[in-house]
Image (cartoon, rainbow over all chains, first blue to last red; front, side, top):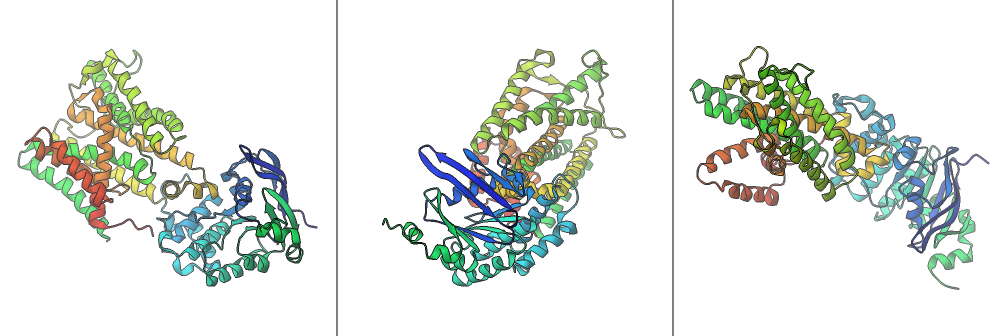
Length: 249
Length: 323
């Protein structure tokens, strides 16, 4: 088995008396989409925040590409190649789609303290940004401000940003949320094509998308992983069905 | 040429042509008025870099304005009396030297203030920058060596190589050229990589961190550059009035700078110029009628905030479009 890209061991996080993350271990291997599902309030977003670095766990470790990143902040993890999208689109709304992606290219290059050259004439920024927009199908919308893009286009833009960062793993927090069927289908196709180059940890409520995409599924309930396995295993697991549907057997 | 560029060019030409015509017609008062506009525009342009591009509402920029003013005043007085500074360094009354000292001192003051203030945001940032400015204000009041509360008079305006600054038109041209040079610099900065990161941090701090850029460092650099510009404007302001006092550092002054930025158009390149023109002309036109002219300024400000968020430049040129 290939070395995991992302390896999470025994993660704990509590807020007061609430154990939001209660001994979670999971990993992400090269070339796979690992879906994380669970009912509302199960602690999925809290877990994603700890992996991205926005929250510090109380205990446990997070290794990324063989390096312990538990003590690093969001910016440092992003520079190592851990990309994420947000549950609610998080873009620079006044900027065009192109400038949003250029910012990511700039972050990757690590050269933000240049004060004179006009960014729009800097091909080392614009070319990779246009390429990333092209890959998510937004090339024709490059000059449109993010505030004027549709919901689905903003999701695509977030993924273009993650691609432009040269991410070696992606954390996607409910990318299908609020999208129509058409949009979901397009995004499912895009993610399917992406996995070969960037493994994806996918938090998602849309079960059609999860079953279509996931190589493995882990089920999070009350901060614990209650089951983990292939699509067929999870589908056939009666505990998961009851827990996920909220039925107390 | 876009509407905004055309409007900017019109403002730049107007601000140069009117005082030169007034000088030719032997009306030095109007030259002094235009000089005041240019200097206040320069000070507000500095603040606009932090406030408009970076979204950092500093309520303490009068401190840098005043520090620059005191540098001009102290150097002028020492140079006039041929007394070395601190008994060691010879003082210079050459403006380029004065500006350099003002810039370095403002950077040295702004760096720790920014480093502490930028750990907060929103209303706390406003309050902490105000608190730092008030500390410097009270320090100036209680420092008797340079006039304390009474301020410091400059007998002879600092000099500029090759020009007579005693001549109102000569001094105006110095201020005007410096203003245009700084605006050109700010335009370059706004469109640079640094400007991209700074403006993105204003719109969405989380997004900037997620692409691996620390907003704190970018903001700190912007805060320091902003303070330096406002400080150099302060040095010119002291030379204009041939007087510097702690009131240059009072919170009224900080508020006035914010008003200039908002009136003209927050984050717009020529916003501070438009704001300063309107402010000084209102002061001149209404100040003759009533001492309470700021009441009318208040109404105008209210109108801008409620109905014309983009200020004067926004009214003329519409919303900002980033290509």
